[in-house]
Length: 169
Image (tube, rainbow, N blue to C red; front, side):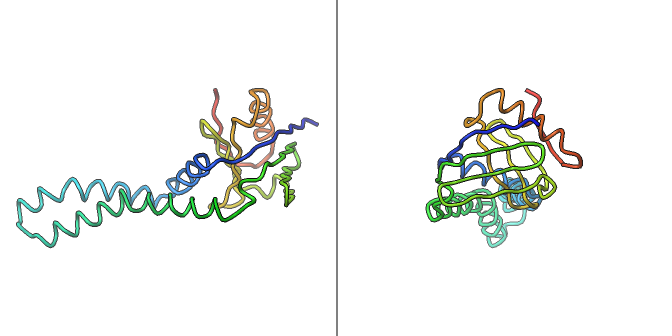
């Protein structure tokens, strides 16, 4: 049975990036971003056509909210969570095979079978192992060798019924 073991630690920039990935995978966040761009683009032409100042102000407020304040909220929430949860900053030992994912930190141990994993998503910098549609464990690829990345992909592909979106590089 193929098994890989590696160690990882989260730093703040990687944690923020992972939270943005999780947030902007939601259709509602994508729609709000598109709506924000649309509102900002259409605000001035609409004002010049109708002269309605109150409409212009609301379009600008909502556009700024969707494009600037929502990302700022995600960033601030991530910062607060990262600095308040000591487990996020612990060095973690990962052991992965075709049956189990075992994560051991300095103050915790987590063991789950692949049938409890919702899906696995791979980005350029990390793997996201989803426990549900909204909750994921992050594995930074910088913590893994090239061989371990390939072995992890092989394990994920070998788990029957597991949804995954993996890179091919």
